[in-house]
Image 1 (tube, rainbow, N blue to C red):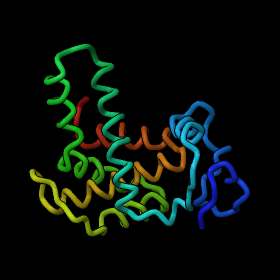
Image 2 (cartoon, rainbow, N blue to C red):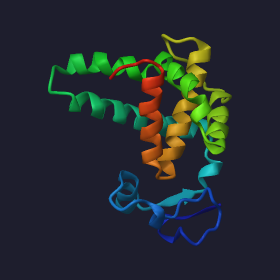
Image 3 (cartoon, rainbow, N blue to C red):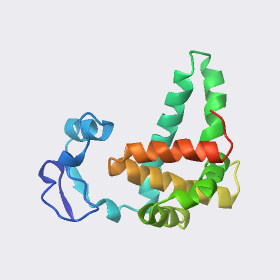
Image 4 (cartoon, rainbow, N blue to C red):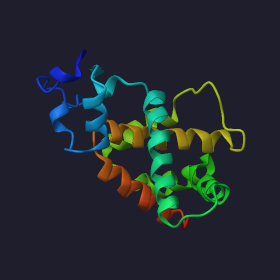
Length: 166
């Protein structure tokens, strides 16, 4: 069920994201305005596609926080960032967050966790990697449905509950 991003908003499916529903000035809205094209029902995206974009969104949030804590050597910022973007850290976060997910988020998490990735993390157990993939799928889903406030809340709460101080 694809239609042009410009013509979205006519559909009634809850998984569709009309361009008009994006918060004015949100990154997602700006990307859609600058790069118009085809979109599809978000619910039809594969769990790994959601995790693919969620990985980048999560990484951007963490890097933004690290940079905002002060100018320092890039190598130092990278070392700090790696502690939060690793599969192990994300696995701890999502295990602490499970009760905080809405039904919709829990369903996306489960799809992501149960997906069959073609690769695995070099420095993580299979379980940690799959839980991290599920977490990234949730973040990707929230980003693509323009619910960054909720994504940021879950990231911050996950860091706190997992005992990771940033």
